[in-house]
Length: 247
Image (cartoon, rainbow, N blue to C red):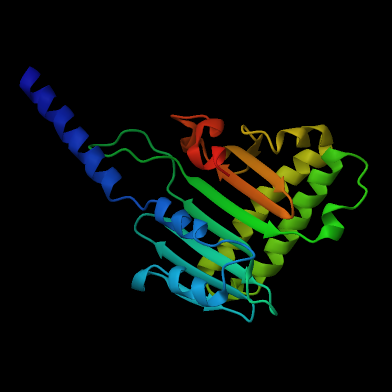
């Protein structure tokens, strides 16, 4: 009886490990995001690094380029997107997105499926007029800049959204997440003080539950990070994630 139990446990462990190893990882997607340096990277440089082999598809407009992909079997899809100044041809905004749509599950024979999760990173060169406007206070400024950042993203992604279902759905998911944050901040503006803290601002995503957002303003650069889904926080708090700490 003990030997049968041991065999069952070993079989479950092997199934779990093999399942984990075959999962789509968001790390290579965001590694490419970090290769773009705003105000320095040129469009010619980005075209060489944004696409990952033949598994991704490149979409372009006059000033926006995106590489996107999906793994239907694993319910994952993603993109990297860079926006260029039309005169200088240098990067002025960049975005990366990843979502795992698989539904929450408990242990099944030999398999453990994590809950769904979403991650979005965005970085912007902002104009001095927006940053230096005489806002009533710092919280009002943060909310205004977050709303402006969402507007810029919507305009940028909108140029390519009709190119694929992946980009269209991804665009809607990012807008929904940030709009949820803005709704919370409109109701309680004082919570904006948490946006630049390493622990970020907590909010509840309509589908993915526990979520966090962090926004930093460094000179004329604005950085945003969003993570939605309980599985992000099962082992470490948001404030302990290396990519959050090193924004």
